[in-house]
Image (cartoon, rainbow, N blue to C red; front, side, top):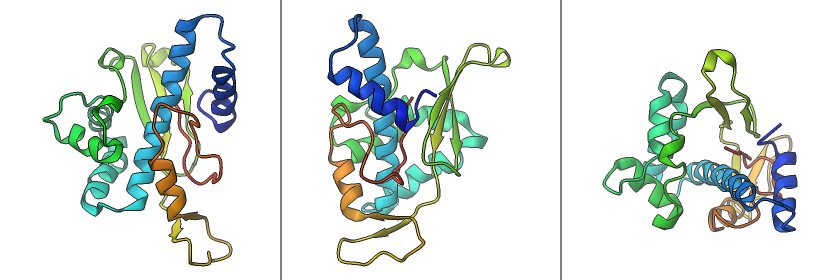
Length: 191
């Protein structure tokens, strides 16, 4: 299925080997990987909580999403620097070159669905009742226990090290790898 870790890994491999006959297709698939990585990095930023206020605001976009698809769209399509959404995203990505996450022309073609019981997202084919609109499923599981590198994780708990989140956040969204391979609990998404 499009968007799973297996799919991300395969497409990343194909792109890295320049195995696309059509450069336009390559760009479109690479764009999907970049958008998915950005969504994953936003979630990692929220979980790291270095800026608690910004993390709480971003968290609200995902938690309230299923009642308000437009709110999450506003975040992902933020392109004007004076908006609150754009300013929040700048805290995550630091550079304007990584924004907006989605191109404004795609706004009418996609809807977002947030799931809280998965660490892997996907893109669903349009259903006839959806008028040809793609559904991007975003994994937003409960925040696992996050340890600094000196603590010993508690057995039986899902764990992530602070250094893993920081490493993932410090990677450029538009460069490989497009998912954090060292810890499957950092959500993988594709748009």
